[in-house]
Image 1: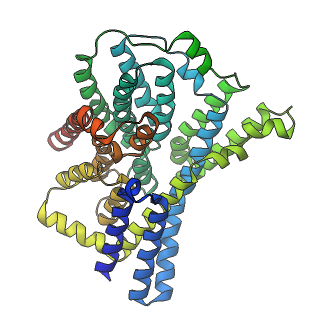
Image 2 (image 1 turned 180 degrees about the vertical axis):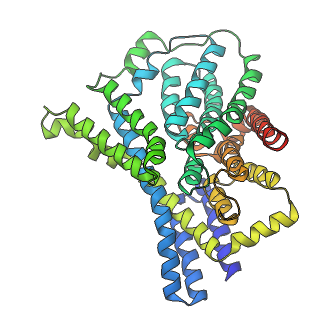
Image 3 (image 1 turned 60 degrees about the horizontal axis):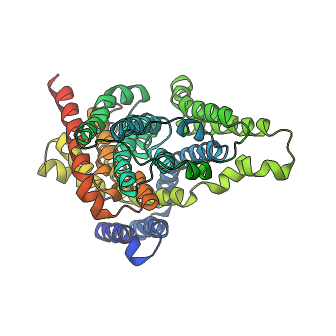
Length: 425
């Protein structure tokens, strides 16, 4: 049974990584892999009652993550359709290459912590297109943006899906992950930026005025209110969990309900037809449901591996072979640039039980950092990288030549700081 489940998982992963070659959507493959893994487990165990209990418990934990994601994505869509993000992007005026790099990278770093790295990347690429005319300049800034968005998401419980998984799973607390990972994550960004600053001289070729006017959109009523309301709802989730001790998805759904009501009040006097493009119902139709189902499939597959004790055996093998937990987690961070970091973190959560490694243990903090920032080393290693790749037409090998070594420098700097501070001081 173990070998069949491992084979199904590896084969599914191979198909996901070759999505562009085989032209089969990765969500379909992930769902197939997840269901097939559980079918193999059910057939070989033969105990239907025990199997159903395990599957129900597994699906309950997965649902917390999925509802959290759906709530966050809907709030972000509501802000976007009200053009709330334009309030931020329209205020950047500098033409200096180095100044714009610092401004956009730091903005992405903090915005990613409040929203998420994927959304931040999309918003910031839209900003760069409004400011920069040269395609090569856009590519370079986009590469820095990927590093900034992933680094910013790593230290926030709502900034990166992997940190969110650890937070929802009880491996880390919101306050501790912020205070522990802020400096390593900032170093992960600052080191590449300092290196690039010496090579970025002069001014940018700005978008000409007639193009700028063409890019400007008609103002939408309530942009400011929706931006403040939406960001406040997202920022309130960690506070909600701390106060009520309820799961984070409850706080996210509460925030969604409040932002939903706000959108209704903003357009209260409009008829149904005029109000529809700015409604939460329309926002729900625009969220990336495919990504939600992708996470479902992956987490189901990892759940099957966990229940079949494959991850437990893997943990024992890695402990015997590598030994040092920091080294194991560091290697997982490097693997996350090749393999999606979601299953890697899910596997880590399955390999090391909370009974042995309680909340805020060093292994969980370092896992959040490595999984969140290691994906920047290759452009296919994170959701933010894949999104930017599609929007700016950056090739895999261009990124490997121009950005990967910078991302690796940042990753090593943050990891070294974390290990030195936590192990020696």
